Length: 382
Image (cartoon, rainbow, N blue to C red; front, side, top):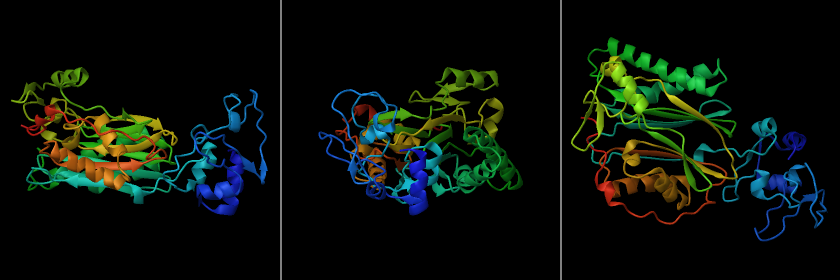
């Protein structure tokens, strides 16, 4: 679809328009069965497509294959979710982009076998063009996770007004909120916060197509693309050579608990976090690793943010497979959190599932149970 068509559609349809509106106006192809030939209707006249190979640079035959464009090659989301088109970003990028509705996002958080649930999560429309998703897994008390839940979005929103690069925004926000938390603990000495900390995994979705993730700790972000799990974060643990080297260079040391899990100074199972101020002089930092991804709604099914109560009992592909069996993201979030408990997780389990264009397109069979799950993540903090 050309930008001219989208502009013309915007004038007569408002900010968002459903796919059916495009079909009625002849601006999108009519979906047929996958075994049938695709036809286009423009002003009630059929577009002639010769049987032989032809050479063209149009969007209807972008690869000059002589084959009509399908829903996938056209860049339209799968028809299992009939979301409206987000016209401003569609015009900006020159292709239809579906609006990601917060009402469809699935969230679940279970306490597990712990005394308290120190996990926190947040989903919001941060600006007109940016959606905000975040999970925080607190340890040593809920104070750090509570602080991030309350203020992280505000820090990011302030920085977005000054900086367009979202990776830079996330890096600055993580460092600034860490400093703000330290001041908060300093002026409230009655709060037992010096040993409190939290993981932080934040995803920003701009214009429905630009996905940027920042993370510290071992909470994770994962994208399902063509039915396969694509990791967007890497855990910050002492097992990583680069992380271990920084800890040792800063004067810290690594120990192992009875389950063979490594810890910084015998206490913390991660090398980056927000908070944990008693370990800051031993190499534990709050600077996130960031990753930028452009979504392809014809192939990308969902984004999942998870805390370690899920991650250390189910691998990324297993999570992807289970979610792909579910009817909607809300069911998926509840099923993943429930299943982690069934597999033996004793920790808090939190997940956010954000559906994209290919939701429901890649179905998976039931993942097999692994007896290795009997060794769970309890005791990750000594």
